[in-house]
Image 1: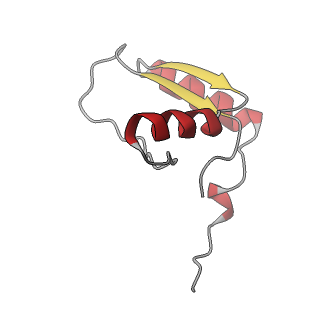
Image 2: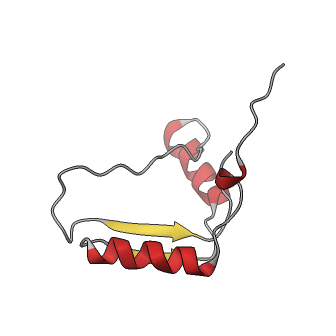
Length: 83
């Protein structure tokens, strides 16, 4: 079985200055932003199994095109999830 090396930028949490910079930039572009300390993938996984009969996973990439300001809420999580 082969493995793929994951770059540190995907497995290392950013520092507070980077998070603050991202929040400021997002808010300046009309997004509401919330920063939380953790996400409960365990609870989401149990919900997905009950609802869909399959496990949950972290597999989302945020890409937004042609959206009006004020319609998107982004949650930034201070926890490595996925990978």
